[in-house]
Image: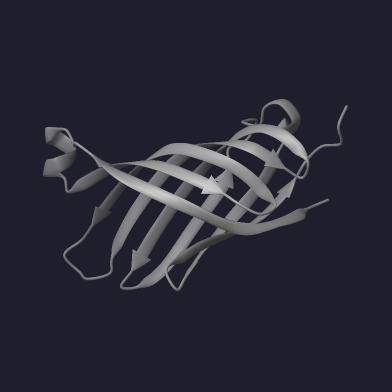
Length: 134
């Protein structure tokens, strides 16, 4: 059975020094530091690679983050994988739980998260499933 978690999150992106290869390719690196609120009470740390193009509002990014906290009354951690593109201002984003990345009470977690940015604020809708506790 799938459950939907909702809430807001705060995110801090910190640019990191690029090596000569990624800098020459126009790829930037950032550290991710998030605080989730609402149905998911958690923190996350991760890394992002992003690249823009010569066309305004066209870009792409990939990211990985480890989320640690409480979801559905169960505590543990899991990994999220992001793949996002912006095609001349039209966004497409897929954020999924990496299979078998759940630990402790979140072992067996599956799901996908939608990130919403409105009025400069970040929120999420997280459709997930958890196996019954053993």
